[in-house]
Length: 168
Ligand code: S3P
Image: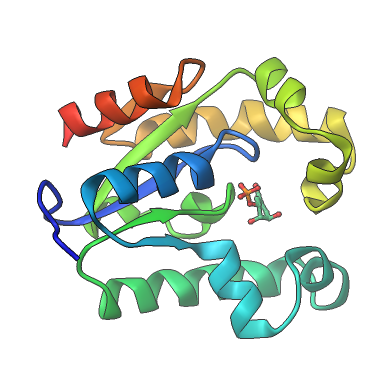
């Protein structure tokens, strides 16, 4: 694969439903790089869906898996675009030592309007929208603090990719 602009790992952070996977795939394709998704890596490793992991092993176990996955990425991978689960930056606050961190920013109302019933049902922390909103408010400043760059994702994907590339 021809890696041109990329010279590091690029971590996409942000709340559930902010488009980390779709933006990540498009960005990786544009950069001629690989795309990784921490939720998918954990699901493959554990052999269960995120929903099942939360239900059977609990959230603390899932957060341990997130730390383990981030440590594996740090060791094993030098250049890639990585979509992180919405809670990963809290479990792994030193993400920025290990690559460029981009926060995909979107209002909670926009998150709600983008997520259909099926999307919500896959996310245990979205089961109660009121609790999800409180989580959103608490996390927003953390995402902002950890990010090297914040991009408003309430715009067409080509513009989002262009803005991220300009920052890189
Ligand atoms: C979580 C976000 C989810 C997934 C898990 C927990 C969170 O990932 O990791 O359900 O704590 O915000 P997405 O952000 O990809 O939905």
